[in-house]
Image 1 (cartoon, protein in one colour):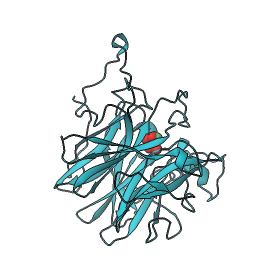
Image 2: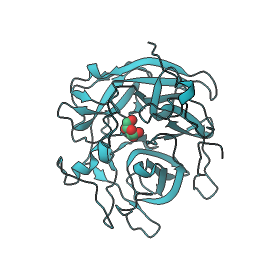
Image 3: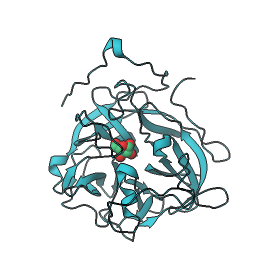
Image 4: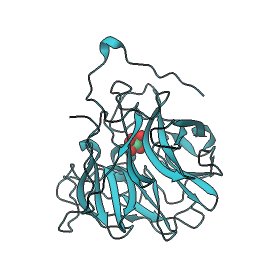
Length: 340
Ligand code: FUB
């Protein structure tokens, strides 16, 4: 399937900093890249951005995506394949609107695609779809995962064979509406010195289709073990959870949303707590920042997006990748996606 990506008009092109990486595909807009190595290839599970003509607001209504396309590449710098529509919102029986950032996992011959979408009551839930191929097409389960809510599922496969789903996002991602455990439309992001709202985690069942335990809130703490405060917008969790393991430590990375960084903490357990370390990726062109971190053939990579190709439109983003470096002390070298 082809789609026309309109180039910005020459005389209205805004100036942007020089990017260190180019979009992996340019025939469609893609965002929120969750990358995995399956069968010795890199598979990227992104959002598929479209122009839905909905005005921008803090609720994210302008992100009105309707399907997923999976990208794959055999080698870094080699051709990138757009594998076509892997799942369409029309084929998710319980879905209402807005297919947001997905992730994937593989176990025992089956690939799992996890996705957030608003249900018919306009409440974000997380669904799962399965396929025998990493590129799909995927078949959605008839209902959302029981007990799921909010957005940005990210599934981490630990070395002991256990799988954990991390999820949640505030503001348009609705996590602030779940602080009492029940959906409350009046729920607001807290302010001041109280702890910030934390991301959520649950171990998955053996068939990877359900939560195997009650959902837990994760703590991101400072060097003194104190939870990051709600007022600390430079460091507090907003959305875009991702976990990778390096030298036996768990790295939890996430977007700080309205301060636009990808930040991270390190912990000794998949449940945290994670001690805040710093910034992995500085703000990119466009409001959102969303990433994944994967090792491929001995090199670590950061997958991210920005809005340069669309001339700066926040809801029309392009997936990119660049090398990521762990320092000798286990910290991560901060990445600037633009040449200074
Ligand atoms: O792409 C829609 C939403 O924007 C994602 O779910 C968030 O993480 C943000 O990137």
